[in-house]
Image 1 (cartoon, rainbow, N blue to C red):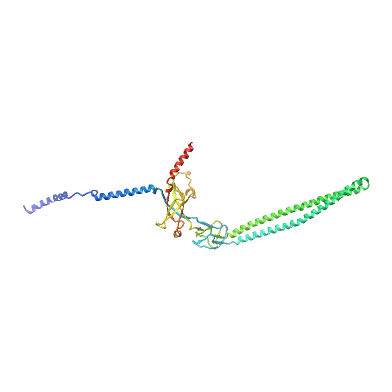
Image 2 (cartoon, one colour):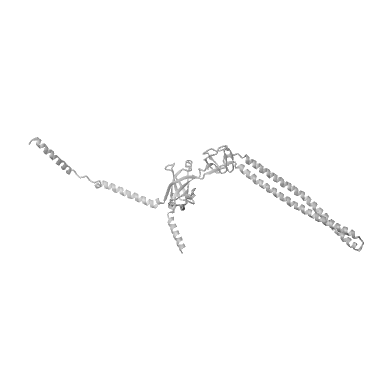
Length: 396
């Protein structure tokens, strides 16, 4: 056979040889049949189960009693500085961000008008005192007039007694004819005149005595005017003293808007004093989180500005209402369609800060707060039992 005849035969047999080689190749094994892989997978599953069990056990014993929120901020009870009087600012004695002590002067308002009011009130006091003293002098003079009126009354009474005795002596004489009836008539007329003089003297004494009461009323009036002037003086002095505004507590000056020469009005904010040494945290927890929260429970605070630093504190108090309740426009759910929204309760937290941290942490900073409520873990059941007993007592 020729060479050309053998080639097609070889080419024809080539595919059969390839299929034979593929059939002869060993089948690919599954990784799960590898003992080492199975051991690794079993270890992984076991680790997951162990860690899952530990996590579940920790959550049941402690984790579910930890309540946290990032809706929390550092706060301080800042004092708004405002004037109680109106006037032009003479001097501003502090600068922005300056640290001040309680009682330190902050600014001075022109007090000349109030000093003039004080001097005017003092003059009114002096006038009232002079008026009272003048009336007292009149009372002393009136005492002499009263003595004179008493003497005149005594003289008139003596003259009346004499006139009556003469009438009594001459009446029997005139009856016997020893004295004329004309003489008796004269004596009787003198007696009536003496009686009139006694009445006049008694009225004069009474008027003199009543005059003393009138003068004493004038003294009381002058004293009342003096007390009114003293009140005006005290008010003017308070206003003059209030022309110097002082810091009511230690802190730092912030939000200063006042400048020398500015006209200020009572109650207008001029600056604020921030007591940066008395900081606290206000955390707004959901109403579903505060069921086991109690005053005094420990708190862990993390400040965003100090990554990784934990600050310890405790719950100091709870707000008497939700944040929405004290908003500018409280919600009125009865006026339209109602959508239930979980409310938040402001919780005040006292924090323990070291000297260095106290310099860095400022009011308004954001923090994360975590409260450990495990100390009250039996309170929910106790409340439930108490309410059941109360309901049973009401049904009876």
